[in-house]
Every structure is written in C-alpha cells, then in structure tokens.
Image (cartoon, rainbow, N blue to C red; front, side):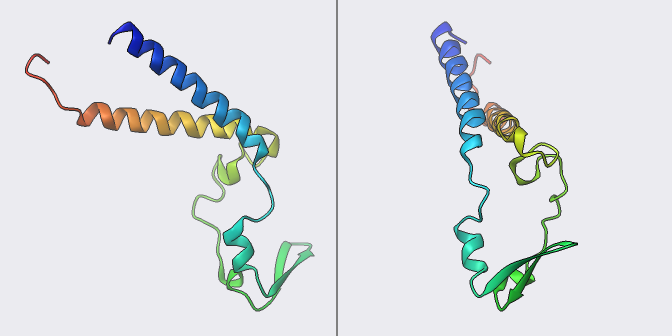
Length: 113
C-alpha cells in the first residue's frame, strides 16, 4: 500500500472515531420519530415494574429486541449512558472492520497477486 493511501486511511479512520465518539453524546434520549408516532394515543405511566402505556396505540404491542440485554443495547455500554461515546466508537470500529474485510475479500485480484 502506498504512503499517501495509508495516510488517507489513517486520517479517515481517526476522523470516523472522533465523530462517532463525540457526536454520540449529542444523541437525544427522548423517543425518535418512529417511537413518537407509535405512541400516539397512549400515555406513559411510571409503575414499580417500569413504564406502562395506557390508552390505544401501536406501541402497546411492541416487544424488546432479542439483543435488548446485550452489552451495547440502546447505544450504551452495559446500560450506562455515560459511555455512549465508547459505544459509538465500538460500533464504528466493528462497522469499518466488517466493511474493510468484505471489500478486501471481494476485491478484484490482478494477475500478479
């Protein structure tokens, strides 16, 4: 790999990590558009067991995802909101690694390789 290409990839990787780690802290913890639409017609009531939806809305039938208890669920590390940036960096590294591995594996090979 040539030096300019290596330098570009290094700068690009660092840029992605800074963006993923920094911008993640600005993520809004309030429901996004899809959550807000599915909760129309319901009110959120706090109970001893957690939140409950009263009324008639689509969200009453929602269930947790199979990985909802995973270590990076809800864009946090272990459920701790203070680690949102770390979750963003981990997600970026995994995504870049998977994409890089896929592109490397599928690239066209020239006769000399």
